[in-house]
Amino acid sequence: MTTTRHFLTLMDFSKDELQQLLTSAIEMKKDFKAGKIYEPLKNMTLAMIFEKSSTRTRVSFEAGMNQLGGHAMFLSSRDTQLGRGEPIEDSARVISSMVDIVMIRTFGHTIVENFAAHSNVPVINALTDDFHPCQLLADMMTYVEHRGSIQGKVVTYVGDGNNMCHSWMNAAKQFGFHLNMACPKGYEPDTKLSAELSEYVSLFHDINDAVKDVDLITTDVWASMGQEDEQKIREKAFKGFKVDDAVMALAKKDALFMHCLPAHREEEVSTSVIDGKQSVVWDEAENRLHAQKALLVALVKGLV
Image (cartoon, rainbow, N blue to C red):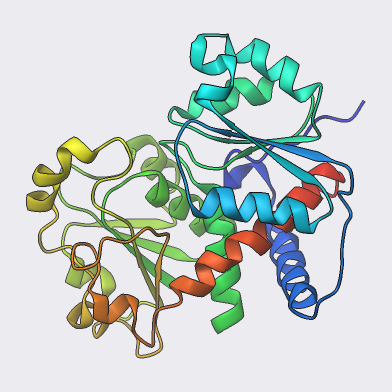
């Protein structure tokens, strides 16, 4: 009996498997743009469990599954017994007996870990408070499309040491680049993860030092979903951590700018940067579709 593979963090796949995913995603995008029909998941169902709302995640997974010939089923907390206290283990056993793959967007990372442990089908982490691996697949794909391999490059993440930062840290190891993290004091990433990945990451409290001569700058909102009540406090703490033209000028001339979106213009990033020539955020957003299609096929068809 083969073990069911899941995608809860980038560490669940080998480096070679991740590279193969990117290759497949780029090929699928090319074929899609050429109008080729590719339906390897015909008559299959993806259960999409949303405890956190989303634009890009829902649209990309639902459209992706449809393009692959399958069906995506949207389930919010209001639509399932999960929102009424049914144990995650029970929900996992029931839902996975009826569908071919599950995607979960939720709060605690232990929720997806527990669900996956009791699921008979692959489970994808579509965002938790700790990690957002699907976004990093799209980000890595986007870099490859614009600049080629990211191996040996230097990337700067600016902002909160949150789920995006943690996934960038994992990506540094898995894709072979170095990550500078520019975070305000008190908002650093998980100390255990930082220690485990110390060879691949460096922490800065000054944005200018962190972005000097780097190949890519990326950022995220200052207050993530569920932290709205901290907005005013965070605005003060993150003052000086805005990616603007002066910050971009310190990076390499051909440095790219990324943002997972949604963006709060003139907070973490200036309008001139996000709409500027170095920004690839729209390609990055679109690539969620193609990277996740490659992921869905790989997991359902047992290609990883």
